[in-house]
Image (tube, rainbow, N blue to C red; front, side, top):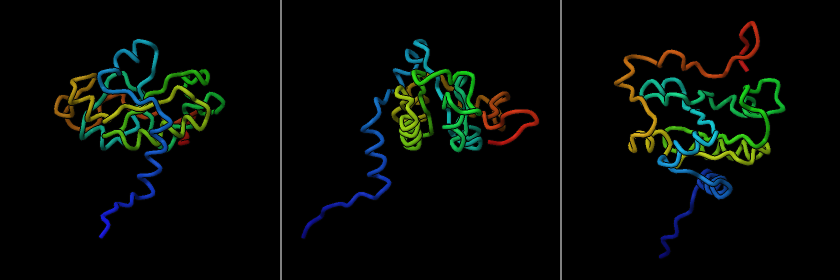
Length: 156
């Protein structure tokens, strides 16, 4: 009797996404930031409140990431100057971030990548994080996501 394990479709999609990325470890993040990269935290607000913050990270909700990072988008961030920006995507454990970074590659943002193990790996390595118990209740002040554009505030 064969015990061949069949992977799910999402496992195959994740594997294909990661095969296109040059993923970085938590230990490599500080050097990447010093070299001009942008760490982008795509975790939902509730997750950031529960797990903790990454001071200095750009908080961009996953559902608007491509619009904020695409230098040709009217909804782009000021940091989205061209296709050579180093976007380093961070989620909780490094799964969603791989898919998100691959989506940025699809836009032509060829230096996009993610952090192996996500926020959990950064926290375990003691890198760049403020745990939730140091923040008090709720999301850190000033950690509003880049989800609103224009005036009056319009969700995009």
